[in-house]
Length: 346
Image (cartoon, rainbow, N blue to C red; front, side, top):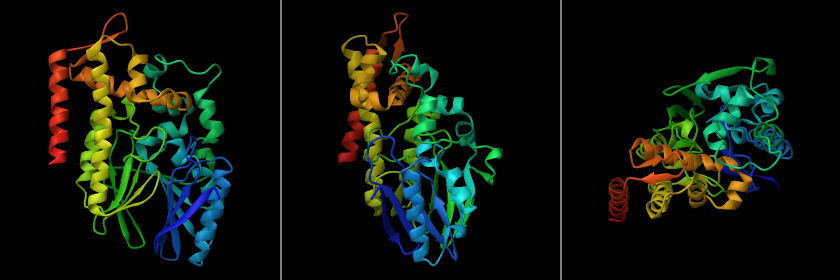
């Protein structure tokens, strides 16, 4: 079975793919809205994932005495292709409208912008793509065969920070939390403590957490995690892996995600402190070669850290393309990380 159906609450169902490697559909959630229903995220737009997901959704709707035509909305946390790839096909099959972050329209509607958001030019120039590897064609073939646009023949509606939507008992509010993606939204009902967090939190997988420089980079990703961790959430529905229950469990996951980000930065600084280093050397300290071969845009995380350290004046790039460090500032930054780790431990 490719798609596993998991009942989270009487009115909330999770569809989770059993595939762990890339490309792998995100978690998709079905929420009961009285006699109708809403999907949160849409998974991949290619088979076998798309067909398997649609069959699982139809079966789940049947347990509520509903059919495909009762699905009236597809709500997207962000427009990365593993979350938005199936939106057009599912909307056509059901008649649902698609709600997406306004800031995510460009990457979902233009193949060039799609690649730019995932693998910025400044990163692509630093890495060696496999011969003949076309990023745009890869996403079209493996994840999202059709771009968003008026010609799709479905209803598009834009969402942004502060927007609200009522779905059954849930009063979901949008919280703009960039870093992983420039338009990333968390949809949360703070009264009942439930949230759909997209890809903001770390999850089991090849490259999460992931945060490119043009999506907000390290600073905005950490700020989003801080903001998220302060919300009173007890049921967290992430974009990948299982649902997390309990306020402390959720807050621990937010701290762990932040710790992962800081740990990557620490490895980069220690490498540059030992000797001037190339981008390739630093990239190897963030992800192993297997990840970078399968997902070359993982290198965007390395660039995000370098841009962050350059903004802080800790690291700079010499004319020979090697990165060097201000030792005093680097030592001070590393000391602050150790102090942060001590505070968490106590």
